[in-house]
Image 1: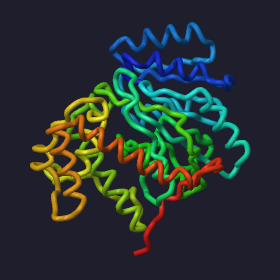
Image 2: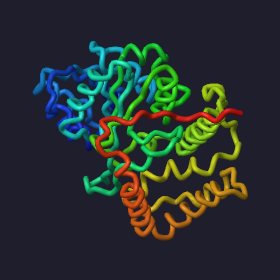
Image 3: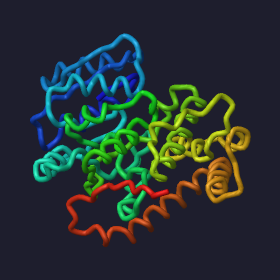
Image 4: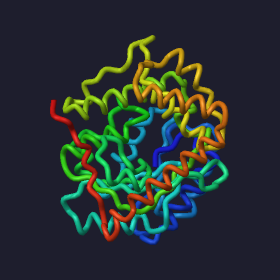
Length: 326
């Protein structure tokens, strides 16, 4: 768990990990220059549980760099990723350990996730429907993955050039090397809140990172090397979904995202379905975020009802981000 300013949720996240049904693990936590009282909470947790090993840096180093730091300090061949505001279900480690033992050819396993808001209220179901379609985007959350450290090292770990989507970038490179699978159960809970890391930085920086993510995954889809896609230049219009991705956490957290004007001014809007979808989402979120949440949640439930019969009795689903041949 790399963490920078994890209050007020880091204690809950730690509790969900130390209470796992599988208990034989080392819990490495890297405090990446926290200034909000996180260090004191971590110290108290380590005092109470000898499995916790604390690391500390005086200054923040970034998402990818801090994650690489903590992984490099881990002394085990299997690594499970944790976030300071997300929660693990009680059997997550046991289920993933059993799968990796049974399937030595698998390098990384993720799980489906559901979403809660800042008060811990359930707001979003898992994406079962994504398991029955081909896409370069993942149905599993970053805080649900377990991987073999040897495979992680072989692909070079997290890339700082992909900060804010360093997880997806890692998955694409690991899937190109070996097998990536998903346990089709919700064993991880993602918290949607305003204290998320992406809201603690400049909004433009996050939006530009998401623009790079969408353009890079489009290149991957076309069979190109997604790592060669350059970041947007200053003043360059951004992919419309970059604004939606930035604001979606606010929407699920129960707030009103004000991105319509920003998207209109800075978005690369065209006469196509992507721009139409982004504009509709932004306008609806501004006018009535409550009704948009209701509709999105209903659509997710409907898609899941259709998808779940196809997933019955399957222990794991392989994630194969299909490439189109140009």
